Length: 115
Image (cartoon, rainbow, N blue to C red; front, side, top):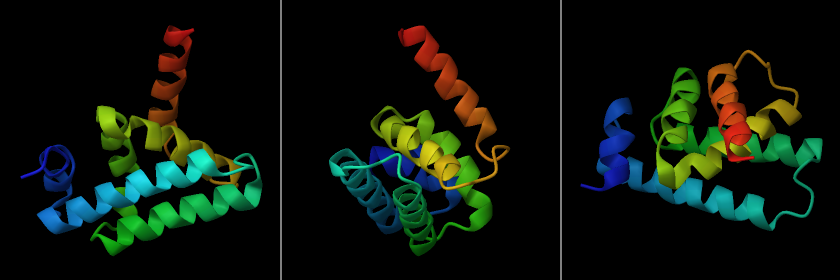
């Protein structure tokens, strides 16, 4: 059983295969974000967030699981970076600021501490 499945997948009732595919997809999203030319662009943000939503849905997660998933991912060292891309992309594409507000607050506090 993978560490990701133990830390994330089991919380959401995912199979080991779903967990592996979700983790692989998250790694791909991070790579896509890292190589993108214009990440502040609203259409890029919307596409990026939509890819994240599709990835979650394809691996057995519901819309209601998205916010808790992002919060859990923020606390997994290997996937914290993905969250720092997902949340701003959601906001840049016009997403409701109430969504992910707890995770966003943690991100800002961590940023302040690292300065």
